[in-house]
Length: 72
Image 1 (tube, rainbow, N blue to C red):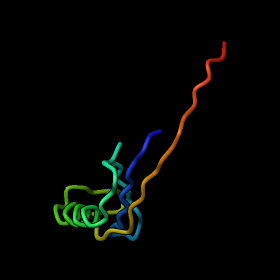
Image 2: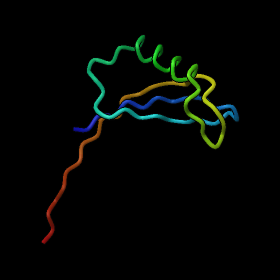
Image 3: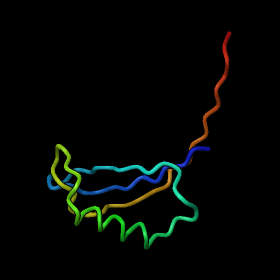
């Protein structure tokens, strides 16, 4: 199973931008996620076509399973 932590940010133009973190450490600490997102916004290191990150919108863990079949 592959897990991904998706961080969702609002941009200057009102769009949603996402950053993903592969294989996040379990359990997810919500306070650390909030603090980390605030630091990312304050650092202003990411710019998108819809502007800089201005606020955090949410975060979620995506858990997916992939099964490969060999077709000969």
